[in-house]
Length: 168
Image (cartoon, rainbow, N blue to C red):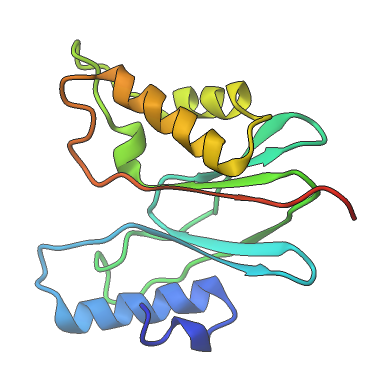
């Protein structure tokens, strides 16, 4: 991705090219899910596309609600030789938080075998909404680790939060 993504301003194009490259170089048994976005720092518009990845979240400070950042279509990369990916766009407003994560975060299982779930994560977004970005991440990671303290992470886990500062 690093070798060519800076040349594309549209996430759907980047995913399409990534899919083509992976089909050229990966064995047929592999596939990859991906969420890809581009944030325009002047307009604060975030354009995104998904290749079969879990939808991301946008916490809206104005409404104190969580928006699910879905797309209409887009299969995981490497499942099909060619695929199209649609894009959506949102504008980040003052104090909004963009929450990006890998599926390992919501697929943690409790000792009883219950999944952590995206809905539970959305609840934590609301619970810790007033914390600054790093404290917000720390609180959510602590809660996910506590969900199964003996074996919290069996898959890769990434949680990235971008918070737009207040003001204009």
